[in-house]
Image (cartoon, rainbow, N blue to C red; front, top):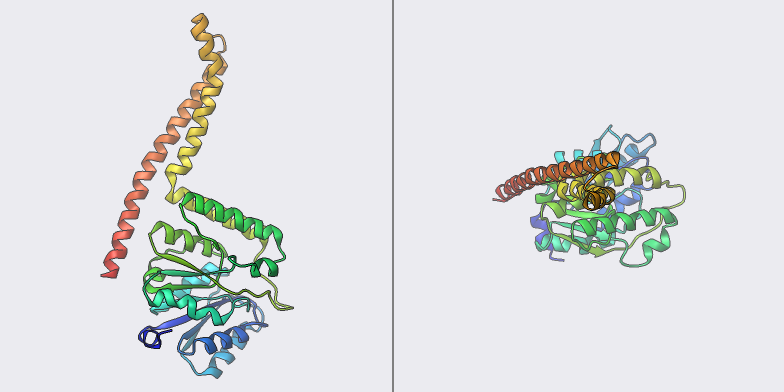
Length: 319
């Protein structure tokens, strides 16, 4: 890697941590060894163990610029939001504090940012079989695949790892990306924001290690899975209203035609309508579908206008 390029950039590593006393020291030392010029920031997310103390002692021992931020609002997204607001770097490296990500992968993740080929680089755990071998939560893997397929279908992308916590962001992306979620939904939100606002995404295969014995994952497959799906649904409503409301409008339109078919057939043959309740139901369903189509069109115009405004603001910030 071109060391001159690294020296020209202010690079920092953000490590959000909640009750990671068993791994935080090794994570800090590992990433400092791989990228000694980088600043370090540990965001202690209201830990109840010795995470803060161990992080502070470790950072003091390696003599590099560092910060420890205490974020009392629990949730990974809250921790990252606070970090992006307070830190002013050229390049932001995100990594979990659980020792599952390999510090030696950092150079290849940095390269596309340093050469201006991407705005966000995602460490892809799924291109090889390492993650599948290390992950023993099969329903978790099923949920990952489902969300990935939905996102790729809706946003016409070909992304492989939506939920990776090992990412490198340039300042342009970090300072313009809104974080509206609170917890582990943040990676999904970050990926979709990049797609919506036309940021350049690049995925690079990385190594992945299973958590060490005694280190407990904070991700609940079912609870956080519901949160992530809900966040995805809200994002679709906010940014793809034509798709969301239009789909329901189309379903109601087809349903109204199905319900009304016997009524229409009877009227054509006899010139009478004897199934009045059925006719009323079909008419009501048809009106509801038209209302949904109208809502979809209006919200789509508003969303496109807001998107253009946001893109112009990003362009002005670049200049």
